[in-house]
Image 1 (spheres, helix red, strand yellow):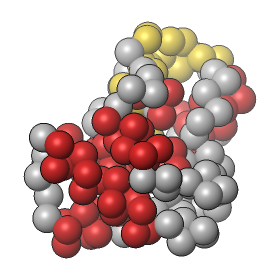
Image 2 (cartoon, rainbow, N blue to C red):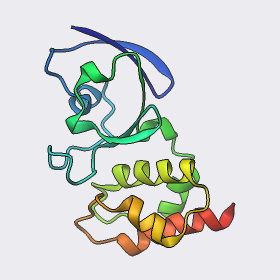
Image 3 (tube, one colour):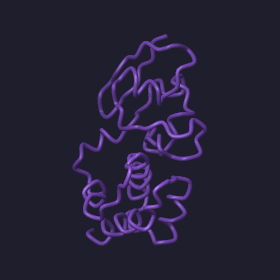
Length: 149
């Protein structure tokens, strides 16, 4: 089947099986490998992308649900987003596997609420797992972007 949707500002048409999901389409058909496979059950957040501006778990989104809509991946931030810079400054990543999902979740928060409280940050980021336990550095990076505004 052919699916048309927008990825990182570019209109695309993808030929994919009827049962294709967004995660594997991004990774295998579009070569956008920044979005990671973590659990395959929408429990860890490693595959978080934005669908029409809302963070979603790409592993559970059927490609048919994406048709005609807009997807933004970590590549769509272009490496210049203030959160990406704060991540580096705060030395957040250890293994780095969850980081694109963490950043995409945090970007969505700051786009919805430019000045969230610590409690709001923690509530919004809850569900994005980091097996290395860098939660304090993640919080520090998010708060540093808020303070710079």
